[in-house]
Image 1 (tube, rainbow, N blue to C red):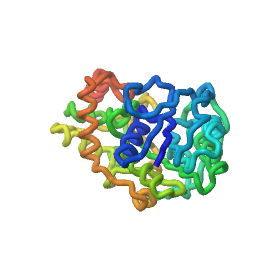
Image 2 (spheres, rainbow, N blue to C red):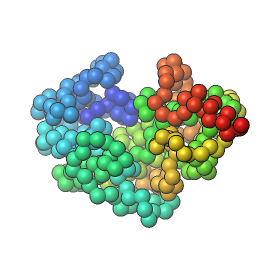
Image 3 (cartoon, one colour):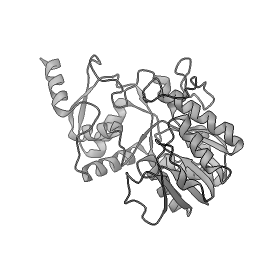
Image 4 (cartoon, rainbow, N blue to C red):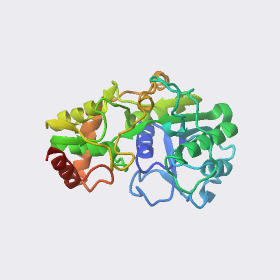
Length: 318
């Protein structure tokens, strides 16, 4: 199978490329050449820039499938589809759970949950615009490709090479042990999916030529946020005491903290039936811990710094 990946050198895209290569696929990459330029040296690369609409490199060639990892606005997918024309078979778009309405859903919600109103353009990607832009992207892919369209909607993705620091924050924090400040209810459900499970699902869907939408959520067993932190500590060989702290003044989107619990309890049934594996949370945590230590544990962009956390816990104990 010949697969073109739009992106493929950062996090989820990197995992998809690695899995596709293991499966024996012939993989080509379209990207700017700025991230991961040293990865996959034997692959054909087409250089361009989605931000400027530069798809000139894609005006020749044909593929059995394209995996769009880096489309965030409708113009991204429209321009890519215009450039590729009828020279691709299946178009698999990596979307997001942010496409869904949050009100009126219950635990176990499926891919048929109502989506938010589409948004055709916005320069800033934030809570208000990101999901709605993804809805419009999905609509564009479905309108153009119909039964040859596949939509994968990951939850919070975890694994090595994660640039968001979201899961990495808790892995690193648990590895330090001791009193852990948590600005949320420890009983909050949380869904994280290993990037390699997302990749396996994508490659399986392409191999089976399957249309439709699929939740990519994990882990293998339901877990609470408190349970996730304790699992990370167990993997690191430390002990933690979770201390619930006020959420006042905490930056929004604190790592894995979500006030709307049903959105962290979506059904993985359709994706599991299509071949998505369920990596145990312990395995994901151990691999992220090893990767983070191997890169020298650089400062994280999310969560409390060690100094902020110590000061907060000291104030609460005073």
